[in-house]
Image 1 (cartoon, rainbow over the protein chains, first blue to last red):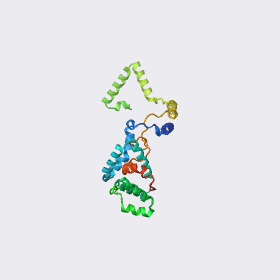
Image 2 (image 1 turned 45 degrees about the vertical axis):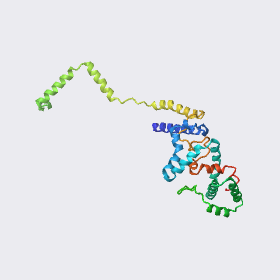
Image 3 (image 1 turned 120 degrees about the vertical axis):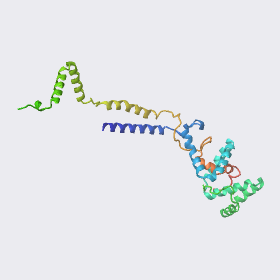
Image 4 (image 1 turned 60 degrees about the vertical axis):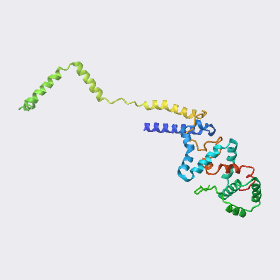
Length: 147
Length: 122
């Protein structure tokens, strides 16, 4: 009985100390990537590994995007992150609109891009849906996740 | 009337007599050591009834000190099992590394550009 009481008390204290350790770990204290532990790196890379393994058809696309991120300047990456946050706030239809507009404008000279921008601003929602159907984004591959 | 010894086989009787003679020849010191050894075996082992109190008295303050002390320690070591954030970014301010690889980064770049910002898509 006494031994059981001692074990219970020590277990509670150890759990309390572990909880205290966890609560005293501010996120900003995390170091640079090179100083992360193998366990932390594994936790960070796990989502990408899971997607890579589960969707073989997306591997070339993921690698191309990763290489593009890497080739960007720090300023471009900062801008891209802002754009990504904007994209994350869109619903699926709005994302499709953005993909279509971006894909179309990439193929246009500056003056035509300006013309399309003005045209888009004057469209009703129905007209925009019709325009997107006529100019589907070609960059979306098969089995792409509907995000 | 015959005694029990008379009824025994002569061989058994001779052995008993030899054993008795051997016992009579054991020295007093040897008998004393044997008596002490026998007594010691029969006595139960002393119980450390209060050992658990000493263990608890030594261990519990130490554990309490650790539990309290870590509250005040600056955490300079990496925290195992940190929440996943995107790898390879300067700020880590976007949460999902998979999202970053799903779309063309140039689309994201364009969405934040002066050209796309006036285009209301949301």
